[in-house]
Length: 363
Image (cartoon, rainbow, N blue to C red; front, side, top):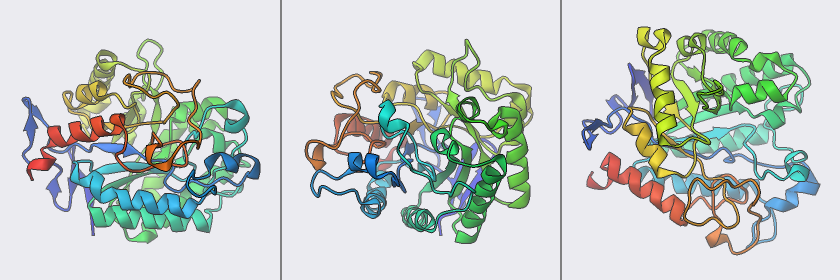
């Protein structure tokens, strides 16, 4: 079975560092974890009024089982290209950012009282098994702010986190990293729960790791913005987590590099260095290059939107991608229905660059 470990600033899989001995353009690649944001891996929508937005164009129906199965089928190909990790989430991520849909869809792996739903757990089990078979690491997220607003209380959030940890622990899979909350500062800002403040996340990280020893636990902030401090983890959180998660949304390479350097300059990081992972950014290969050149793992985030052309920094929110057209040309990895194949120029550019940097095609 695939086993992930953290040794210093490196990720190891099955007793060896990732990309062992690999250097590229004078930079150390060994120990990094190139990854894909695949947070809709177990997606479903309990709201029948919004569910129709996710129907597959070739069948006219939405099928959460097909969605999970096709993601699982894609993983060996991703792995062959040098991608060693993916991020999933029990509450997914934004499918489209149109207010009447974004405020109404209901994708939640937990009941409002925090019980893990069996159907979501079963689909997540399939993802863990497929990644295990492919030799890949799964960053499993628990919370996304839209669905957190469907939780009844802070106690329900604690119950959800503990049920998710218990599920992962009992699964027997050793290829798991935990991300408690996706962009916890945004969860804190947009929900009634102080639990998602950076300070309280230190508490949650520490409690869950103590209750489930041997599991690697972290939480992420929003797209980093050094001028305001947005998304930048405080030193107390950097000290508490097993690996540092930051997001690169909205940045260009110089600002992303500065944010990485700012984390590294924290006394808490210098006293106990550990991997820094970007597991959400953009389709922008220049940002990926800025990350690995600064010794940081990078995650491809491709929302999918109408009019996707040749500019990976083009903002997508005003142009949602619906389920029109044919299945083969569906773009993005976050708007259902998802084509998990490497079927668009953005996807091909990312996977080709990862293969080049990691030497995957030389193995």
